[in-house]
Image 1: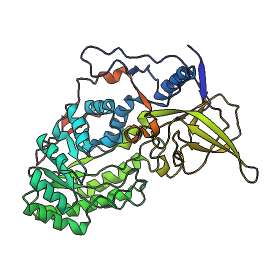
Image 2: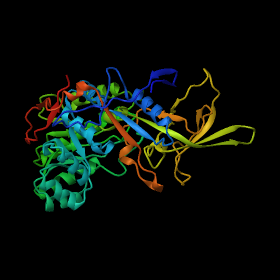
Image 3: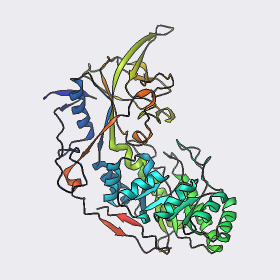
Image 4: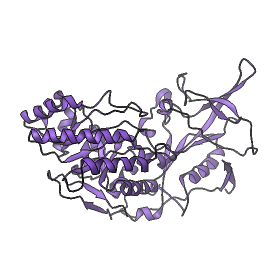
Length: 453
């Protein structure tokens, strides 16, 4: 069926997305949508909306353009040439996202046995994994030991005691407390050792016969203050000196995550990278024998997906003073792919997929999810939208981070389906992993970095 749908003033030809045929032995499934040259996830979503609009089953869905991962990887490597990315699996644990990143040669930041098992199951070498949860169940530590995942973070004496008993051959990374109060999702209230505690922890590790090989920190997810990296890197330099004084072979710096994801984020990634590069040049200059890794998640995954949701119910409310307010009930909400929206500082206005007049009147609107919980809404604040009807669609860009991985089936509503799309040229990377070894690490960590060309 051919036609057109308008959204944000643009018209896109519609038709059924073309599916890839794959080939024998391919790691890519035939169900992957083959993108035409220049085609985007947004355009595939419009086609899918047209297809579903002819049906009474208008379930929520996402479209993931896996090719975005390659462009984000290239951007990361170019902006931070000394830093090897270890993707934060928790951000999006889709097997196809992980396979593409494996093909590109990234490392992986895992936080649990399940994540370790998923990444190892793809054939990723244990040396390309950091178990970056400072508070680990004993059984998960034992799993890491059995499978040779050596890099483990810690921030307490209790964690050192567990590791000494269950994985004395681990290579430990001391996580530092950082200033992250201005990040959207701060973490330091839960994780990280203060500078004052580091000397005691390094001594305890030595006394227990454990090897501390470096430091890590995390400035908080979606960091808004690039200078937080500068101070944290300077603090790591001090801890390196402490560690070496206790006989530890300190040679790994993990600068964590916190990098912006979607388009138009402030501060921009390039600005943040300039601050990081300058701090590294000052405190960990080239030739110092220190390997540097990071744990980007949102930066890679956010712009991979667009999400489409349908209006399943509507209510108009006349408030005091004659103000007309609209309540829209969507088929996905807080307990689905919008779990983090209530914690965002400002609402993200969706794109209306409907032909409207050039300047439609806007109304204050509340967007509710489908469950019976009144807390199930997308934003704390109202958003301004035109008057829409039951059956209309809303599209949200930059929905690849912390969406599917945080979805639940509360109240019997299943998670949104995801359709994966890929340009044919990305398939050429299959079987041609362009890894190149980093400079020899004093610990023999065998870190790898995907080519960025």
